[in-house]
Length: 400
Ligand code: FDA
Image (cartoon, rainbow, N blue to C red; front, side, top):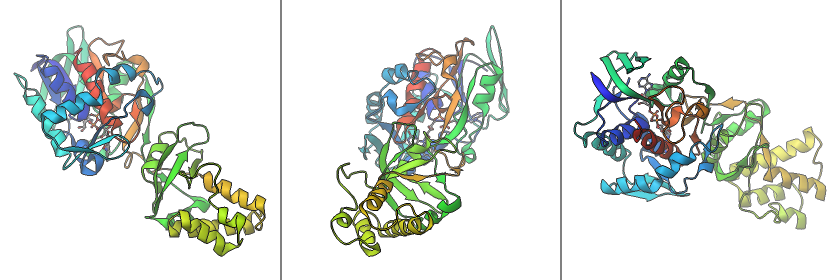
């Protein structure tokens, strides 16, 4: 079969690009190796799909080239996507921090994308179970062979995503194809991912299920996140940890401020500076701020520190100040991450230096485009990754 444009991958970026290109009168097919479209959309946002973020701006994205995403994000904004959501009467709400979710189910977003794919004449051809895809290219365009037959097209869009959640169909296909065409890859790594604790720090896993608001940071980076951290049976999770995982490098520590809302000139342990100074008073002061199990664990850590390291001996003002400083910058030393099995997204990917930022076309291969998560553009948690999928899809769809 001959098409104007073939898109590989029926995820968020692939479906949206297909619908947009088809509405420009391009004859479009989507080849998906799995049995179904949009599987990540359906599980996203706890089943309610955090489909965009009103605070979208380029500084919410990581990339070797922080300027790369600007053009596509300006071309297609959260308000454009929201207009579409309104047209389909999908009820939505803003949760916190500009995050927009469906009121009911993520199915509404997938159904909308599929409806958009069938709105054009002819509609987009959606071809599932198209595994074992092989691509060849010559001056006449692209020739694609797969389990569903032979296809040719003038332009080819790679929307096969990253490596996160292999059980939902993630493969390294996009990176392998980029290498086939001589494009550089920024090493992929799991991000928006829980961190694991080892050694002495495994004692914290006893707090599994406890969560508290923290300010999370890393020593070398100015970006900080004030959100919930959650202790798990393997280490640390929750939005604050997922966010900082994107900035964390193996071997580094992460720093948690356990009293992020307390002004810098106020003290969490103030009661001890002005009143009784002993272990029960310490425990009480901590319990006033923190969940009981966490407060007691930290109180024990302090008493261990007194006996083991002798650093903050006794109840003198300097000893209390040292405790206060620890509480505002507690250093954890993650042993690793929970990997691609648990990562919401993959950072790294197709080097943006190889792509035109306005069209997503490879500079060295006319007609070859990369969109969505396969590209080295990774959003913060909170709807930014879908917004990148929509925006990069539209940028490519206008040029294919
Ligand atoms: P995506 O991974 O969606 O699609 C790629 C498609 O290509 C898949 O259908 C795959 O099967 C197919 N494919 C792969 N290899 C292939 C091959 N060899 N041949 C053919 N097809 C192939 N983001 C956000 O903004 N808000 C949210 O609420 C969430 N929530 C969330 C929850 C969970 C659990 C995860 C794992 C992720 C999120 N995300 C998110 C991230 C978001 O899902 C992700 O960034 C987008 O789905 C990326 O869209 P893409 O279309 O680029 O890839």
